[in-house]
Length: 159
Image (tube, rainbow, N blue to C red; front, side):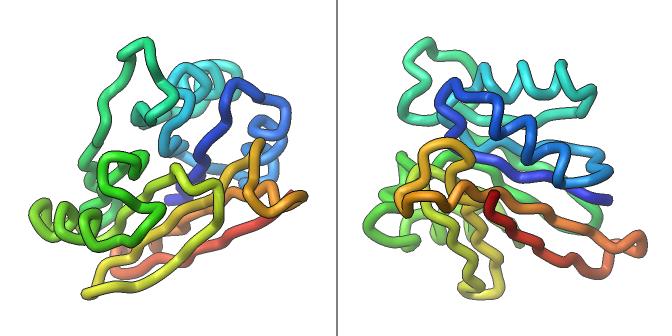
């Protein structure tokens, strides 16, 4: 199963739609917040199932602030990250992941790509597809889960 991962689209969908095309044949799109409505619009326009969370810029109150999903044989935790101080460190987010027994954490908020294993948990921030902190580094990720459910591969790209 291929899962596309985006974050921080901030109402700018052109590059996000291009990223989805570049992801190939994905079965699910995860959007780690800022703007929840973008995720819903992208899912409808591309005909893809979407799971999304609200971020600090989602002032309309739409969307959950966290989602816990079963993908393959993995517990995946999706959040924007602003409630956990991810711009300072992953400590609070790691605590929450441990509470939930998550093996993969997808988050956003920093507008920077980041991938790290910590305490046996994969932390993945795809960066921002529209407003990257590093100029020109419009990024997204794909998680490719093996059919047996026993492993996964992370692909991250910039456009």
